[in-house]
Amino acid sequence: MKKSLEISVHVFFWIVFTAFVFMLSKLYLQAKPDASLANHLFYVIFLELVMGLIFFYLTYFGIPWFRKKKINLAVLVVILLFLLMFFAYPAMRIGVWEVMSSIIPHVIVIFLAVIFRKYFDAIRLEGEKQTLLLQNTQSELALLKMQVSPHFLFNTLNNIDYLVTHDAAKASGAISKLGAILRYMIYDAAAEKIALSKELKHIEDYIELVRLRTSGVNYLKYQLSGIAGHLQIAPMLFQPLIENAYKHSSTKDGENIITIDIQIVNRNLHFLINNEYESSHKTVSPEGGLGLNIVKRRLELLYPDKHNLNITKDNRNFKVELTIELDDY
Image: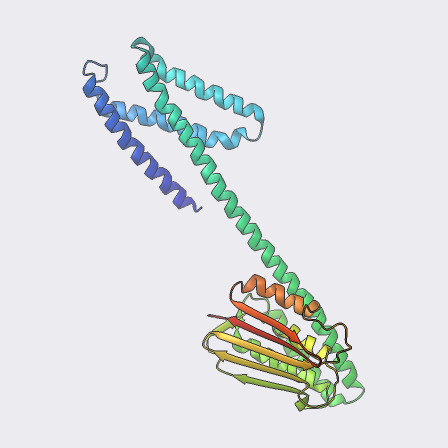
């Protein structure tokens, strides 16, 4: 709970308390016009308010103090009992009813202070839990990004290693593309959300690296429809899916072995990737390996109730469909 809201609750409570004391004091003094201070209503209210403040905040701030050591609780109770007797002492000369009427309201104030303390402590504890949960989530997301990066670098360096011995010019181009992608990963992907247009450019750069290792541009078919506009998305969500499709493809030659289709309709993005694979390839399963598990976990953390991930396979094709409801920036 914000400090300003907590203060507002306390102020409201004391306004109500003062009004309550005013009514009771006025009724009591009217019923007993011969009582001492009968003609000093506002002085009586002021005295009761000061006493209420003492009992309330001694209890309210004393509870956290006595929690540190059990003996402190006994000290707090002794102090409160001493004050109750001290303020009730003058009424002992009048009668038992006056003593009780002096003690009971302050006991109620002490009880209310305990309730306030427990209530605000519970809200503060819940806030701390939420903050800790958020910090853990952010740490987990950072760790997931770190897991993506080495996986990507391993595959890409293998691509370049292959090209060095087959086509030096393409290897040079691949290194240039890799540099652009690394800049993206270091500077842009550090943010929780980035412009969708940047993520799409990153996908296209990575696709070019994949194509360099294959039989040609027709090996991987890529289609994009719709306008990115002002939409934003979590960075590097689709890269593990492309890595996974390339890794488990049945062949590195041919046409339309991998197909990627991205459709942007209003604020919804539909991503579809399909790759051919050998049915004897035991590592391919709807549950997925590291890449798919990373995507699943990030989606759970970043887009709860705003995404739909569907992974299917048959004897020849492995397909991943992902729909995300995006936000504007």
